[in-house]
Image (cartoon, rainbow, N blue to C red; front, side):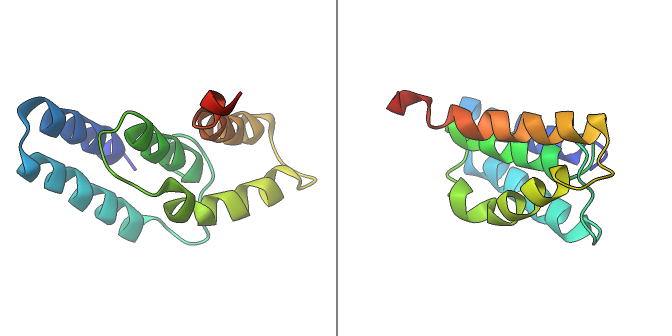
Length: 113
């Protein structure tokens, strides 16, 4: 959402680097702000929609920068995105954006194989 997610990722990294909870709290507040500003119906694109937000949240969890139950937190993404790519009028860019999200989701299970 216009750079907020990148700033949230930065503060999560900075909190890890400095071992300061206040920076992690800033990241959490930014995530909450992003969630509250996300228009309905949800945009899907990577730049300012569910695909990009989902990738960033999964990334934060996989890098152990924030403790997030991504299965619970991203449930709405997992329910909406497959239906969107099955639509008749879906663009190639939308398929690529959603593919980025599913790719990072798959990464969390790679240790099982």
